[in-house]
Amino acid sequence: MASQTVITVPPQFSVIQQQQRGEWQTGLMDCCSDCGVCLCGMFCLPCLNCQVAGDMNECCLCGSSVAMRTLYRTRYNIPGSILGDFCSIMWCSPCSLCQLKRDINRRKEMGIFW
Image 1 (cartoon, rainbow, N blue to C red):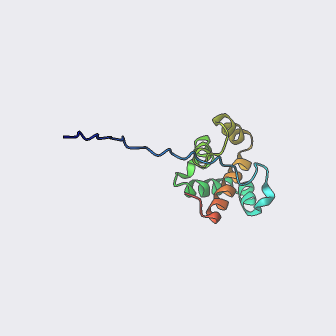
Image 2: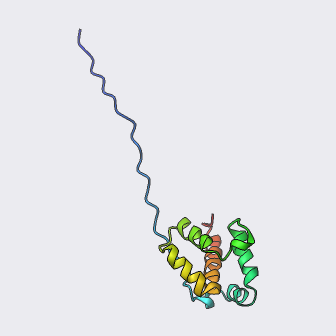
Image 3: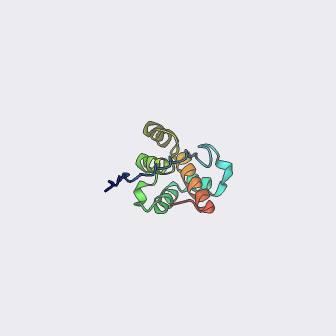
């Protein structure tokens, strides 16, 4: 009787695609790209703070925090560091918050906002 050769192949795992590197939709000082957001940031920063936090399903007190900016940046694979996030919040909080809100708005328009 001939012997049968059985070949077993272990399951193959698919390679997880590397997430594409993201970018901010606007620069830190691109106030003219959305004047409404920038006016809100200049004259009612707490309102803009709550809008950003609401968009990200967080407490209103978290909108302009380093953790919020870092969370957003890592979620969309935007290059940077916690130190960079801290510096932009510390020395240019209104501009940083406006940039975050403009980015959220643009991603919503494109249908890619989580």
